[in-house]
Amino acid sequence: MPVLTLSKEVLLKDTQRRLEYNIVHTAARLLPAIIVYGGTAGLLVCSVCQYRWGVLLSLTLFSFYMFHLAFASLIFSTLGLLKVLISSNENWKAKYHYEIDQKERQGQTRTLMTHEESHGDLGWNDVLHIVMIPSYETPMRVLEETLLACEKYDQALTHLGIVLAFEEHEEGITDKAAALQEEFEGRFKFIFTTFHPPDLPQHLPGKSSNECWAFGELCRELQEAHGIMPHDPRVVITVIDDDSELHESYLEALTYHFLMTGERSRYLITWQPPICHFKNYMRVPALMRVSAACASLHELACLATPLDSHIPYSSYSLSLVLASAVGGCDPEFLAEDWHMYAKCSLMTGGRVRCRPIFLPLMNYMPETDTYWGTLKTRWAQAKRHALGLSEIVYMISSMYLGIIESKTLQQRIIFMAPHAIAGEDGTCPLRQCFVGRMERACAACDSYLYVEVLVLRVIIGRNELDLWLCNGIGYRKRYCRGTDTAE
Image (tube, rainbow, N blue to C red):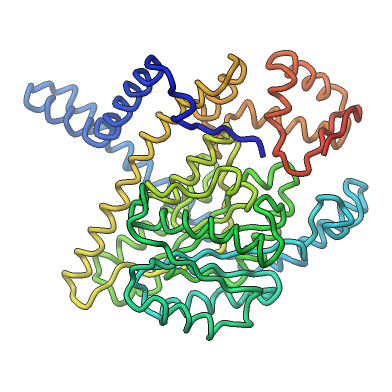
């Protein structure tokens, strides 16, 4: 898969570029504070200066925002609940075979074949799932619940691998890992444990650095023990917290969405289940129950609304192809879920999208032995989540690097468009329009769409268009009149 490197060492060799980058980076660091405190500071200034219209405007805008937020959450969380009900009762494997059969009858696809026979077109039994579970000081009972939930997948024994990513400095971790491997041996295709060493350079303690180490060890294990290369198109990785329980049909639904997305697009998508903080709902203080209910409904509403540019939260799935292309997680960031999506989006020129799978994932809220201890732990978690705002700095700084790495004006426009003008799924609506029309033109050979493709190639250049549409894995340039074909 062709991606940008966004390497500061390579791109910032001369003094002028380093100076420009430092200016952009400093401005980006100020932006989060302006976003968070700007409105409040403006209201205080207007109040002190007795500027009545400014106060009225500030309160009106805030009231409108809260009304919009509440109304949207009410409408779209209800829609999301209906989608959860429908998805929970769906037989995803039967639905897949039924839709494939219908397409075959209509002559829109070839007869269903195995991965080897179809030269890249995958079937249901070709997809291998890997669930990565970063963990630190989590009770054995909770980890067992997480693995038992994974075991409910119908093809767990043959098509599901487990990666338990532990921290090496956790006390008694070797015995815990050995006990889990012994208990669940033979229930999955494989169960593999990694131990993240402490005090590695640029490894900030947390989930992201643990995943960074685990991903490197996983790629090595897949290649040496299973003959699976880092860019194998059959593998899908799902990252979950160590206290999470996947819905029993989630991996089947993920297989369905992965296969039905299409060969060119499936490696540019991340999938997200609704996160529900309900596993210890009745044991935590009432204040945290309200917080958990509101957060879960808001997350569900964001997934259900077509107006939201969604970013993966907590647990998500993506292909091994995409993860390998961008080099896995970065170890020096805290908000691993947000940062991974931002990194994928930037390095692929904004082509990555996040799509929902409406099968809820259950997890715990922070909990201790005392009332106030639980509230204090939740407050610490909320502050840690708020640090995700630092991704704004990463996004803006990396966009400058992307502009430098793009050699022509056309390439820079292509890179900037999806990040500056985001559509409902975080990509440029213009690009989505042309890509969608391109796919329909290839399928139906509509002459007017073919003309549009030719016009687009003239505007931005053939090489840029090819890079736009290509995902680099078994891709064939299917132009309407059946011109060149390249593997």
